[in-house]
Image (cartoon, rainbow, N blue to C red; front, side, top):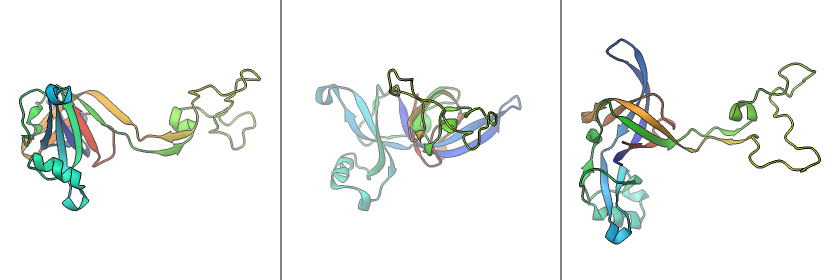
Length: 205
């Protein structure tokens, strides 16, 4: 499917023709350079490898510099492959936000905000132990019992407990494209997308 690599700029809201206020996210989508063309004959599958966001030569390895030199472009920070890309593109071509049109639906994939080590109330929505009744002193946000009596004398796999939260790959599907600002490479989609400001996202048609 066709797509682009982008950067999350932030959230705002716009009014539609009926005067309804719609929350939306602004994404800097592209321009992306075709850095490699995968073919069935050579690679066993067909795909386009796109690069986004320039990287200084100082921070690029020699392998990177050689790879991007074939495409006639500078080293890129983010490289992603897209299979079944619509249209014919060759090495070094630039793909812009024009591949999207207003009104269509896209899927946006990104890495969610990392929240560190969190307890069960924040991580899984537990209610805590008995709220403030039954003599609870300082255990209002505790998970409660996790065992299973004398048999099987262990904690089952998958038990919802405290732990690292966030920092996961998340895809939000069927977000409507509200506006395409081609001259500034901006894409405005309805709703929220995963990740913090300035984080990379992958947009699929």
